[in-house]
Image (tube, rainbow, N blue to C red):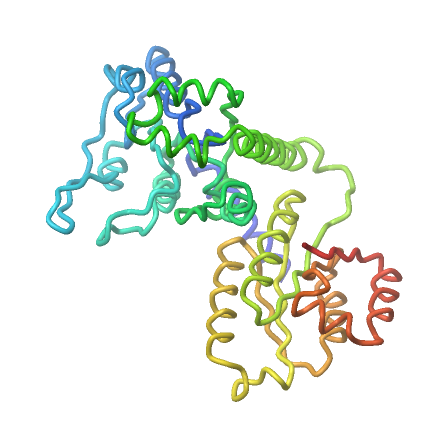
Length: 373
């Protein structure tokens, strides 16, 4: 068994060495200059003899950005007809056939046109990286899956196009493109982000000063977290540290569980640690008793957790607390995450006399308990 694991580990090292490098620009919103910075870097690389091509760049009719595209080699886009219109997409196979050293691919969270090989552009990027081509891409902070609810709370807008956190985690370099709120609003008013007809609505919604400040903080924290992870992986991995393992406990309540999943994903992502999502099926929620809508919620939440990198644990047990403790022991869990007391799962736990027993056991085993709002 040890020989097989050793061989698999070596094979994984070989695959990683053959994979292309991935650089990702992150911004707090549209208009901060991510695409502009990517193009500036492309010109610099080209001058230094690097074979670089544009796979897909979205200029959004911005004059300064459009001017920077001039002089850079382009990979022709795929043309597709969809609902009577001719549309263009990134041509993944053409990029792979050209085999440039570096390719620029904008709008990482973009959803591809129906009929494309991959549903999402980030999947296109992963495919290209696997062929050994280096990729420079960009995304706004609001498109990161685990931040979806935080963004909705700040802006009142639920962002539909999202990328899994593991995509950001795979970036070899993450760069924050930062502007002050005043600078960004000035750019908007000058027509450098949206056309004139869209400016008043933007100022009332996403581009409110208080929204920008909060989005800016999220972007700075995200990039700092990625840098911290890289340092820990590559610089101080030889020092003994506690091997964090998170257990997110969910029930059949859709919104509560989604919150627990997303916030646990953020914690696990920050510590670069393995994490699990536990659902305990009690007799009240057996297959013949649970409502169909709750079954759908569970399936959707299992899918979300998987996309965010969790391992799903589904077990039957009359006692949720006993099940949690058994999994903590079996999986060497260091932190248990549950929902706020007035929400479904935590209510089940807190309503019992054994909650104190759970706390005592967690304390004795040096396991932290996090109650998520």
